[in-house]
Length: 266
Length: 215
Image (tube, rainbow over all chains, first blue to last red; front, side):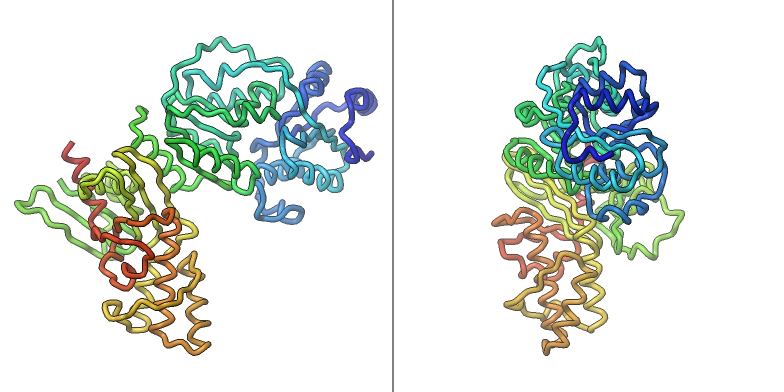
């Protein structure tokens, strides 16, 4: 069944779910809330293929993707190759990236399951309690990325804290880069859009706080490296950082030094 | 209290309990595995001390101790990597650490000096350069230049200039920079930068450790 000539509307998706009755689907990026709501309503298990879900050798993806490619999308392919899934929903367009569209094409040929593209243009804001909370930064990212699997906003009783540092960017493939940041770090960029459930909201994505030292992060080979570097150049107190598969010791040291020399309390 | 900067090729020590503390240098490959110091930095620092200072922090604190200006850029060119810190009006503005594409530049320069039996004190800065982004890959350019008729010393000098130009570009192409690291003693390298260079010597990170220890 070919779905890649168009992004199917909700009715088509419902028909597919009625016919196939999938138990376990993978998602890439943040498909529209209506689609996630449909999956939630049918109690279908959702796996976030952007996250590291299998401990397999990344070299396995070289047969289908260039080695020099976005580490998140290489992870998507690695997960898809090794997980037992009934369907995959890949968000493409302004809420994710063109590369995801091409990866969808590759996965459709590679896998015997339906691979559906979506274009998330949701505009209803759901808020950013985790992005602005006083909470360990890794915990914040875990909560935000977990929230992608649920159509409803995560019910979080969190008060916003005054920020002492900022982290701008997408959720990194390797969360270990988040460890040196204090709990009072506010999150910006596409991660903020994710929590807000408006991944195509460029106005929200480019928001920064010019009064706090901010790390502008992008995955190597991601189109967002251009935006990260541009915003970092315009910010008065910024560190631009792009990281590929793993956080190198020099990347960690750069973040540690940036925070320490900016007199950000641990 | 013994401070140490454990570099890839050389380790530098300072004993603050000596009457007139002066830095000492040892090749890192000759270090006793059981050696322990009180405060360390550098690529190998964590192996030899329970108290480790991030290299960029040590570089920044050393620059603060040695430079009287409040707006400056200090660039450290080591055996294995290059890193810089830029301050404006006493506040951190920018930093960078290139451990991958700047790989092994200092190490390769020293290797070439010995292999071709050259004296960098006497080599002139060449007009042309190589586009060198990695010490190891740059060696191919040397071989190609020699094959094309360049003398060994000219080919190596072009390589050294290429490294200086690349390091300058990595640091954001400043008009003036303070240079840290063992390559301060290499006049060919220092003169190859397309900007004003103020060499600070190879003990800047030790000065940073001392400043931290004194706090």
